[in-house]
Image 1 (tube, rainbow, N blue to C red):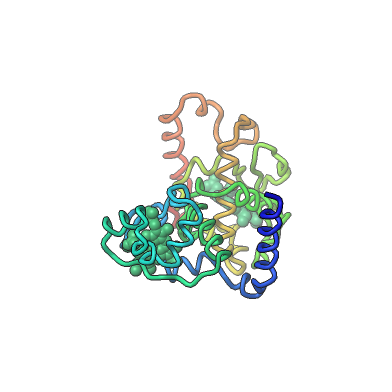
Image 2 (cartoon, protein in one colour):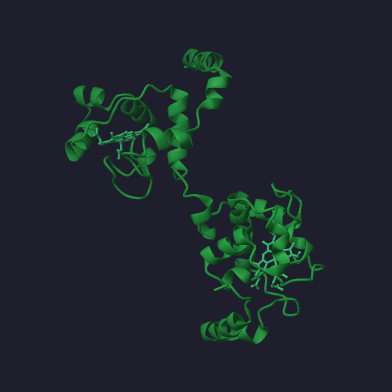
Length: 263
Ligand code: HEC
Ligand code: HEC
């Protein structure tokens, strides 16, 4: 037992030494998947030429996946039942891939974490990870700088149940703004800096990723458990109690006040 442990540790060490850091760094699972797998596979978007790979890491043990990705036909020829069944079902040959174990593991982790993400511009805020929402908060407050040098949102807005940025009263409190607009509308509003006072961003536009992170932060703050502070909230408190019709009425009133050129 002990000696086999030692041996596997040794193999691991050797593997780490052999795998050149430069090579390991240049293996990007997203672009590899895009170039070498996505023509035949999706992750969670249905069958393409081969099966949908969502959940594939729980359908097969890792050794099987390694062997199959290297040579699916080799597995079929060896008489592996699972490989034969899959080939029988899809009737197409999956090409062999000359990847290292480390590269396959990286690829499998990428698949297990949901695979390719749609471009930030088209992502819904609710698909954001907690880290992306936290980044949005950092961008909002100025804790993290915006790539093109725009001012932090907290210079004019407050947001979040924490009300840390209460001081900024020049423009609307954005805590609940996510509830009031369609997700894609907010993305466009942020990328196109539609409001006159937000013209500061025209020369220093937000990147797609920044707009997404900020939207994700606004999404999180709109869903937070903490009750909106009735004094600084832009949602009139009496509408909070009466639900959909009240909000709709208020939205209708609000849309008449929107600046020109904004639908
Ligand atoms: C030319 C099309 C094609 C390409 C490219 C391709 N595959 Fe496949 N893949 C298939 C087909 C077809 C199957 C079904 C089994 C078979 O035909 O052997 C399959 C099956 C699989 C399976 C088993 C799925 C299951 O549901 O059990 C995995 C895992 C897999 N492929 C991973 C990959 C990965 C990772 C890549 C990219 C490195 C890739 N494939 C590239 C066509 C392809
Ligand atoms: C220079 C001041 C300023 C800065 C900085 C600023 N905004 Fe604004 N923002 C405004 C003004 C003014 C409006 C128009 C509506 C209002 O008065 O609240 C507005 C409107 C908005 C709206 C629509 C609000 C609504 O209720 O319809 C959103 C969303 C928004 N801003 C997000 C942001 C984000 C995200 C940032 C940071 C990237 C930001 N703003 C930075 C001034 C600013």
